[in-house]
Length: 232
Image 1 (cartoon, rainbow, N blue to C red):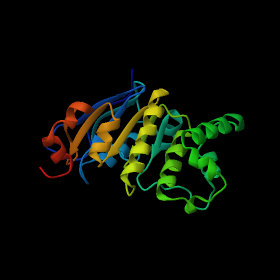
Image 2: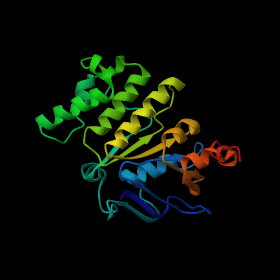
Image 3: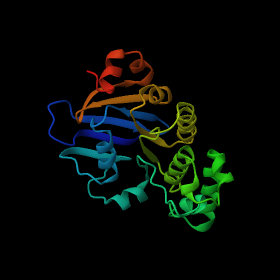
Image 4: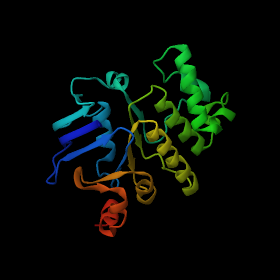
C-alpha cells in the first residue's frame, strides 16, 4: 500500500527525467544526491512549501495540491528539517508537547513513546534544548516530528554534523519507526549509511531523477555512488 506517491513531478526546468516514486507503509526510501540535486526541494514540495511546476503528489491516493502546509501536517505528514531547528529555550518535554495535535492523554502517551525510542531524551526531559549535544538535538527533532502520529515521516539530512557511530545509531531507530507502520522518506548525502537502512533508493541530479532501485542493489553500483556525490 502506497502512502506517498509522486507522479511526473517537475520542480524546475530540467532536461532529465521527472521525479516519480512511491513510499509504502512500513517502508524506508532514501533520496540521494549531491548538494543542489533537489532532495530538499522534493521535501518542501511534499509538505507544501514549494509548488511543483507539473505533476502530482498524493498521500493515501489523495492529491495534496489544494492543501496548505498545516493541513498536510494534520493529514499525516511529519517533517524533520535539516539543521534540527528545535526550540532552543524550551525543555525537551516542552518541545514534544507543542508538536502534538492530540488531547492531553494521547499527547502524554506519545511523549512516552518518544522517550522509549530515544532513552537519552528521558534523562534530559527538563533540560533546555540548547544544552543538548548535536546528536541529542537530532533525536529530539525526530521525536518531535513523530508527535503528531504521522503516517509519513520526512527527514532531511539527519546525519549532518554527526559522528559516524551516532549516525548509525540514529538511522537504526528509523527501522523501528518503519516497523510500526510509518512510511519514511529520508534525504541524505551520507550514501553508505542511507543505503544500509533503506529498502529502496531514488537518485537525483540537478533536480531530475536519474535512478531508482532496491537499496542493496544500488549500493553495489559505484557509478551511482559517484553520481550521488557529484563526481560524475
